[in-house]
Length: 638
Image 1 (spheres, helix red, strand yellow):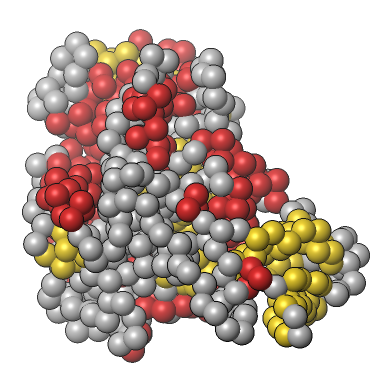
Image 2: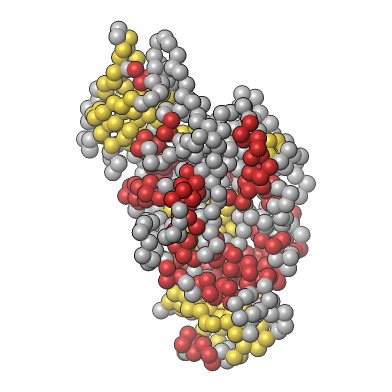
């Protein structure tokens, strides 16, 4: 997400210090509580469940004068342990414990002040038995899509006049386009046919944000990274019920669902930003301070503490206030919401935005809370770094760092860079395909490199096809690496149909609508009939390889053994006691003949092979012919 806003920061930094539209240039003030009758307008979490491992819940109670009330709870098995007030009298925090004997029902929260009594119902639910928290593993293939740009199944929810951004216009690349979860449901069959096993959407939580002025253009928060109400899925995507329906139908089709979490910041139109519970709810500075986007001070043993503080506590961008996770109330709010989301919607895994900018002890607490409640769930964060050591810091690792992360996995930005270099750079001692080999050769830093999520592009980067010069041979070679090496592969929507573009002049260029996702689209790339010959070839290529990977444990979960590249030829194997797959790459621009005697450790006992992508039989594997700029995937046979 970092790259998304770098240009914006340069363009509007002066404005930050002068703008009176929202008081971001200094300390955000607390609202003075209105005089009059107290009221309770919100309770978060909106509900909880009996039988949870986490049976202590802290309710955030909000409303005019809500913090001036004396609270009581009368419900069998539910005990009010503590009621806390904070700087803003519109807030109270109620610590409840829920006994194992408690039954589902409606809990009455009673607040009194003088002769006034205010009640608010809060639901304690029974847990359902639906599938949830399955996790994603190296057996999965994740498809990343931006809901607003994927498919529009209900045009009636494209815009709402009462929202801060009431616009929707597909002709404008910076505004919302109307994609939603109902449209995504209608494309489940397409993803299933492609060989996808898990779907990751950019955030679906409400982004009731006004348009921002970025580089002279008005832009919407269609990407989803500026939350304004944690407990509501955005109405323009269909709301909570549409999300529940999507997850349910995805599970019925055998697809898992990854939810995109944002803990570091919220949108400046979030309801609690407009009436802060306390000054320490956010990272506050005397004048506006942006993060430097420099991750080195976090792991640098020689770093100046002031540099580290700016990296971690500086704001990501002006309109995304930075949450102070060292505040225990903020930490509880975020952790409880994470658990609530899994239990409510049935999601299977978490992708965490801007992971490295979060308070890391807090992240360990949050990760552990999820893993305790849901032992199979997978968590992988975004830490955009350029080296293996810094990347390892944010996952379970084997390095003697003073801080030990408990995050199971992470997005593998370092391998992404190596894969692209392997396709773009000429063969050299340290360049080209050597970059792929050398990056994987450092996997010893991770406790489990198979939990890393691999990719060749995403919603913040230039599209893969454009980066490699629209070279179809390189396109196939890179995707073979992605889908056959270690880790959990992730593909950005449209890569399978050759969608292309660079971020310049804006991120919107790499977030174009999927053709065929809207009823009035002239072309429907979701169907073979709507794709041209090159697009169908690319789709079938991905489909064939992804389906084989899905159906053959050797390719997704087998051990990896790689051999030093020689003269641009790179060979590795995936193997189990029951099978062996050989991946041989010729990264040069000339055909090559590859003798296989060097690989006898893995080829011993095998005399034949089948080309997984072409189904061609090889009756002699003593020498393999490799076309220029090509990789082959061979199932070895005896």
